[in-house]
Image (cartoon, rainbow, N blue to C red; front, side):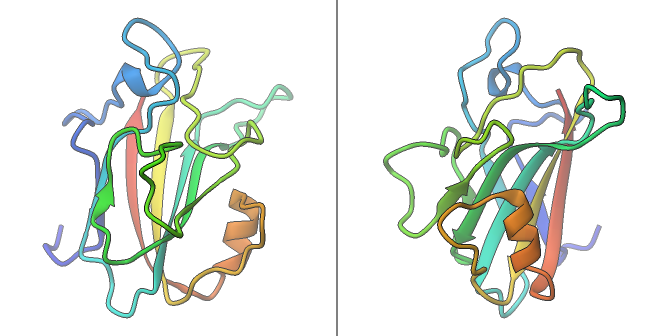
Length: 162
């Protein structure tokens, strides 16, 4: 891994890639809808904004196939920010201009997953963008992905297991 690589990390995810239980809704020690802390490094030059999408990429659809379940969407993150602190989602101290989009529960913010089984992989994907995405009032993962097409300068991905 190059030291110049655009990277996304969380100080709470251990070396085995485990997402601590307190960020989920299941089991002892779980805290309701507490978002994990995130840090990023080496944001690409000319980045105008950052956007984050977090998904449970092992979520089963009732009809059978795996369909990623959106846990958190955050847009309009200033490129000079170096991360988001633990519990950032839904707090009053949010940085002006940053917006939290709707997750697949149709509500804004981090929604700690209630897992039917252990071993689900969670993918945190941070996009470095050459513009601020024009999404409109209601932010969703789908609207974000359409708005950023052709504007992605880099992607940093962090995958963990819960």
